[in-house]
Every structure is written in C-alpha cells, then in structure tokens.
Length: 300
Ligand code: NAP
Image (cartoon, rainbow, N blue to C red; front, side):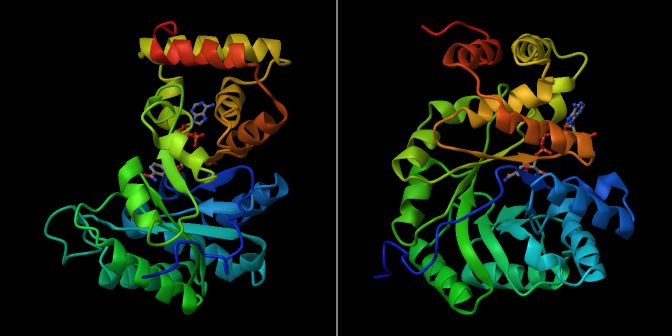
C-alpha cells in the first residue's frame, strides 16, 4: 500500500498569481515576444506558468520551450505546471479516433516525456490530471506518480476538474498538491458543491482557471455579465478606482482556501490587473455584493 502522506516532497509553492498560456498560440508572438512576455511576468512577480499538453492543439508547450531555449538559465527562474489525460482528435495525434480521457500509466508517462521534450526541460514542477478519467485506477496512477517523481521528471502532482469524491479517491493513494478548478462570479458552483470545502479540509490551495469567465465578463451582449461587471465596478470605485478585472481577482483571493488565480491574458496590463488585486482586501459584504450579482439573487 503506498504511503498516504508524502513527507519527502516539500509543499507546493507557486507565485501568488500564475500565468496561464492556454491562448498563447492565438497571441501570435514571435520567439522574442514570447521571451519578453515571460520577463514581463517575472518583473511583476509571476514566476509560475500553467500549461497543458493539449494547449494550442498540442503546440503551446513547444512555443514556450523555444523561448526557454533562447535564454539559458531562464528555466531555473520559473515554475512549470502542465497537464495530461485528455486525448484530442488532432492532426498532431492521428492515433486518437475520438476525444477521450486516459489516466493509464502508459499515457501519463508518454505525455510527460512529450511535455519535457517540447518545453526543453528535464522536469515539470507540477503535473495535473486534466479531467477525471472514469476508468482511473487509483493504485496504478499512484505508482506511476511515484515512478515519475523518483526519476526526477515531476516534482508535485494534482488534479483538475475532479469531483470531491474523485479527488478523495486519488488523494488517499498519493498526496495531491492542488486542485485546479473553474471559479469566477460567473461560475459559482465550487463555493458550495463541496469542492472548496474539501480544499480547506485538506489544506490544499486550489488553482483557479477562467477567473474572468474566459473573457465573458467583458461581453457586450450578456446581461448577466453586465450585472456582474457593474457590481465589480462599484466595488472598484471604493478601492481607489481599481479595475473590474482587479476586483474580480480580489474576489477570488478573498476566499479562505487561499487560491492561486491563473491569468489568461496575453497583455501585460492583463497580468498587472491580477497582481494589483494582491493589495486589495474586500470586506465580506463586498464579497457578497459580487456573489449576489453572479448568483442573480440575495442569500436566502
Ligand atoms: P480568463 O482571464 O477568464 O479569460 C481570458 C480572456 O479574457 C482572454 O481572451 C483575455 O483577452 C480576456 N480579457 C482579460 N482581461 C480583459 C479585459 N480587461 N477586457 C477584455 N478582455 C479581457 O482566463 P482563461 O484564459 O479562460 O483561463 C486562464 C488560464 O487557466 C488558461 O490560460 C489556462 O492556463 C487555465 N485553464 C485551465 C483549464 C482546466 O481545465 N484546468 C481550463 C481553462 C483554462 P486578452 O488576452 O486580450 O487580455
């Protein structure tokens, strides 16, 4: 039976804001611009970058790896998160007949090897299982994690988009470092479906994806988003004219599970909006004011 706690690995550390690169292929940056963007993030105190094997149709890790290769030594200044477990139908992966999930050791090891090659690095600081595989064999996956850690290819492991019971099952076999979940004033479910309760119970800091609703927060023809935006703007007025985006990040950061929000922006100002939120502490009433606009109702 594998150990339930992993005392050999120090706790996961990420920068308070993590930069996500899901959309990097759309930013249309040349290698110099990618390198500059990484440096601008570092100057803002963001040293952790969130990848997945599938981002940009399996191409973003290579784009990022090219930038790392252009500056020897840069890799040691940053932390790299990546994910595996989703198999997309893609010209890059002709063997995939349908879209499916795979958490078998064979797939996880092959995916990690691919990510390391593409990113031009020898290790991932954090590997996440991207979506819950309904055929997950927790014992086999825990052994696979142990072997990858022993080989120095990954440092920490976690999951993303799992239910509390799915996370509990795997965490009982191998200590997980984080749960990466969607949360925003436009996506409130984790607040009361047990997901964030479990994070607190396990002292597991969650990572938050689509903190601005995937950009939906700024949609012009979306009445719900407009209501949330107005609530964020009103709170922003009370915090020195902070931007809508900064207040959305401050709303996430107010949660006691101590989340790590992941930005999605290719603009430096988009990163700055997130970092500025670190100095804003909302009152509980302000937090509920934003929740109310998101939920479109008062608390009971
Ligand atoms: P997001 O911040 O909710 O959305 C980013 C989008 O919002 C971008 O298109 C961005 O465009 C736009 N945006 C940001 N600020 C804006 C502003 N002030 N006005 C107008 N538009 C604005 O984050 P996300 O990209 O959906 O997700 C963030 C990261 O989470 C991803 O990069 C990825 O690493 C991770 N993720 C993980 C999962 C998972 O299943 N685990 C799923 C999705 C994402 P600009 O570039 O123009 O700013």
